[in-house]
Image (cartoon, helix red, strand yellow):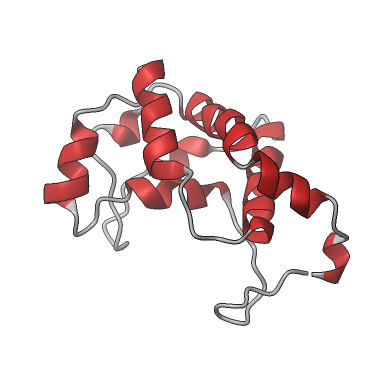
Length: 136
C-alpha cells in the first residue's frame, strides 16, 4: 500500500480528486467567474476545463497512477454514481459552479478526464506501471 509522504497515511484516491481544480469555494470571484464562462456539457469547453483545471497537479507519478487507476475502476462499474460527486453539500467546505450539479452526463465528463489523462499523464503512468506497486 502506498503511503502518502505528505501525511504518512495510506493514499486511497477516488475520482473526486479530479474535481479539486474546479472547486470554487472561497474563489467564487476568480475561478468561479472563469468557470461560469465554460459549459461542461459542450465537448470543446469540457476539454478546456479538464486540461486547464482537472489534470494539472503537483502530485508525484505514483500518486497520478493511483488516481488514474481509481478512475479507471469507477468507469468499469456501470452503477458508479458520478453525479453524486457534484452534489451540493451544505456542510462541506466546497462548491462547484452554478448548474454543475445538473450536468447532463457526468459519466461522459469523467470518461473525458480518463481519456485526456491517458495522454497528458502518459510518461508518469508508464513510469509507475514499470514499478512493482507492492513495494510502494
